[in-house]
Length: 116
View 1 (spheres, rainbow, N blue to C red):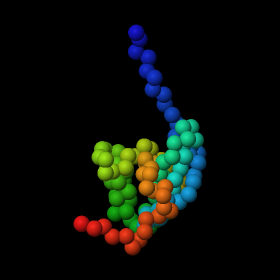
View 2 (spheres, rainbow, N blue to C red):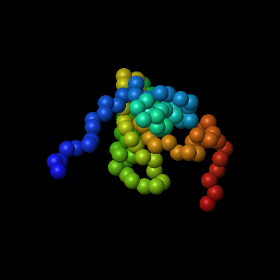
View 3 (spheres, rainbow, N blue to C red):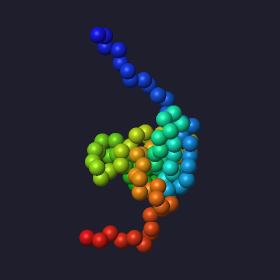
């Protein structure tokens, strides 16, 4: 039989996702629960504000780009999978697989300590 590909190109943009609640806040930005409008799948969306990155300088920009590159290349059960990376005029977005535990609490307890 012929080699007809079942792959389709999908145009993904910020409008492709329905924003839900904030899962956490950090120095670089915020992480929200988002829903893919097409498949209704939930993801975590890390939003990095460009204004903040530019104000902090080349080290912050380098860290953001390195994080994106590492999430693209690494495959480990201990690292969340990056599905898409997007940007608009105001922010960079990394759409990641959502961890079930992140849905249980609105944010990580800042007083939590890891025990060795």
